[in-house]
Amino acid sequence: MEIQEDRISILPDVLLHQILPLIDLKQAVQTCVLSKRWRHLWATLAILDFDFRRHAIRSGVDLSWSHHHEEHMPRFMNFANQIISCRDINSSISNFRLSSSNFTSTNASFVEKWVDYVINHNVQELDIDAYHSPKPLKFPQSLFVCKSLQVLKLRHYFDSMIIPKPFSLPNLKILHLDRFPFRDNDPFSFSKDPFSGFPNLEELILRRSEVSGLIISAPKLRILELSFRGYNPEFSSEVKMEKIWTPMLNSFKFEGQVSLVCPIGELPCLEEVYFDLYPILESPYTDSVKQKMPLNLTRMLQQLGNAKSVTLTLSTIEVLGMDSRLLEQNPSPFPIMKHLKVTERDHIIDLPQNVMNYMTKGVYNLMVEYHIIGFCSLEILFH
Image 1 (tube, one colour):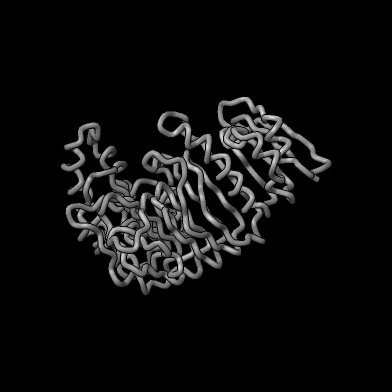
Image 2 (cartoon, one colour; image 1 turned 90 degrees about the vertical axis):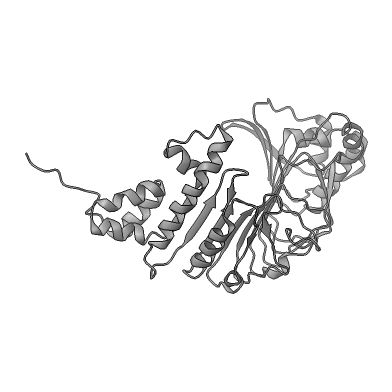
């Protein structure tokens, strides 16, 4: 019987290095039994993705029982440690990701050693979503002199990560922070003016973070996203930041159930604005929402008035429509807008007339187009 040709093995290394990161790391390592060439391939993988949940499920662990998390975590950590220990020490690492499962504790000593290892192997993207207890994670000093790192993504779990002050990464371009507080005298938080140590930062995403008093000062920032989805300040309908100074900002996105109060500097390069404001209309929020949220939203949109393309969700429109007198007394926030899109999933778009009048005040020759792209939306183009 004629032996079928192994078409995968005849592929060049450069292509196989692109294929292996697309499959589970454990399966990638298992291919090492095939030949010396495959052992070399996994030992030189540039992308290391250690996902506890995926690893546990593929190992047959029933994660519906919490004690199984604690039982399997040491095996997961040992697996990751063996992978890193057996790597070719001369090969670089482009991406390193570690993801545990919610509050399943990792060994901080292991993680600190891994971070130091990948930094010394020219890592470009570092993504850590893990809970470290009882010992918190402390970043190695090598991180702060790293010249290769361009993307940093961190998720915080209740005092499990020590943040040095100042936190400085001069070459970093993209920073994503999830669940972080911003306080000056807290070892587990960033300072209230943290981004001066990131002079080349171009993209900043803050999710579910405590931003009261925060200063965002970033001269090269082009993309800013603030998400409060799943985050509720205690009985409050607003969050108050100190200042946003981003003269090169091109795109601003905001989502959450609280309104933003913050003075923003001039944004001459602003092109795109996205707002998804969905208030909680239940006691004790109701009165505060109806009194403050329309005013806060109107003021914020006025500060973003240089935008050419604006997307508002229907819930945001409903907030604007809470105070008709406010809309009548103020000019349209976007005098040079070229494209307005109103969108909401699973809703029929019905733009209130008072809001339509407010948004299009002083704008002529508009054209309205309806588009159905997975959800209902209304697009208004200005010429």
